[in-house]
Length: 478
Image (cartoon, rainbow, N blue to C red; front, side):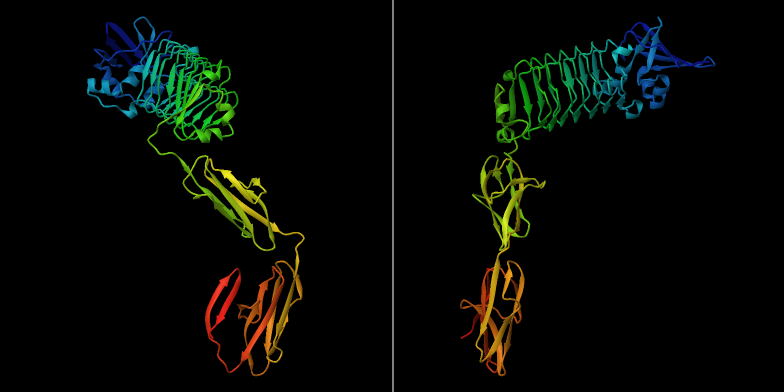
């Protein structure tokens, strides 16, 4: 024998059997006042308790077994199935909890509204008008699609809304879903009564998400980073768009059919206009099509950028014109690449390795954090340089590994003192360059070195050693 559950309230008898197959042609919201559940079991025993007490005992498994949907449905005495989903959702609200003294219960209902759960084309709850569901965190694909009587939705903790969830809800005027991070494809497609929306943490707006929302006047997406194609197509009443400091990427025809984009005012944070003007999807030309671009005040300071320079080791990169950090968007700096000997400048590349310019000195406008690398290449054909050595023959001799070599080649010079003498240092152009013997180096210019010797019994004291332009300069103590 089947267990039968009856709800008595507001003058109507509502009866539920464990097996209910018909769907609702009309949907009523059962109020909690004076609603009583009577359960009759096989032996004739019966228990009576309030609907609140009954709903407290629900578990997810029972809901699923009662119906293939997430809603438990009940029949009234006329055999009509009634939808109590709003009762279950509303039961978790603060107001109802305060009235009944029953705390919200997460395990009593699922946190997900399944795909097509209330889709009107399936005849489910076509007269739904207002929804408040604090416990719901996810709304499935087409969950409320075509619910043309739906006026307002409030899902304060929903973080995920799948495609077409509210598509075709032509009477929907109020949407409060502040925690959702992504608006998927066709989510609010053809919501022709919707006038304004605000999604404070949504970063992505899907294809045709608000297409044909003909009454939509104002949208706010302060952290959006991506707006896909046709997102606001045929929103013919649109006059205000609020975005964040970072320009979102745009798909194609985002504002197609909006009648006249010149009616729309774009609101962006103070100090971010430069970033929009220099963004490839926005740019000055596209911005000029709007009625106005207004920069609004923000609590956070204006964004500053950093210009970082690097090189491949065969030269140096330097910046001038001001600090390379804390640069306000649009300010310029000069960058200069200087090759090492035997090398010449090749190109500047960005952080992705893309070529930027083959001009060694550039004046650039900084519009974002930027990394530029100076790349060099060997001079071609490589020049040839001579290497000569000399000495006081009475004290010793000097020799070199080669007499000439191409730029950058490794060469060496060796000093051999005569008896009674000792090598002191190599000298070039009156300057001491090294006291190594042999002296090895890469040749980058014509070189003429003199080996200096001294009496082997005399001690030479070195006053100081300087390193300048790759040469070691030794100053003897007099």
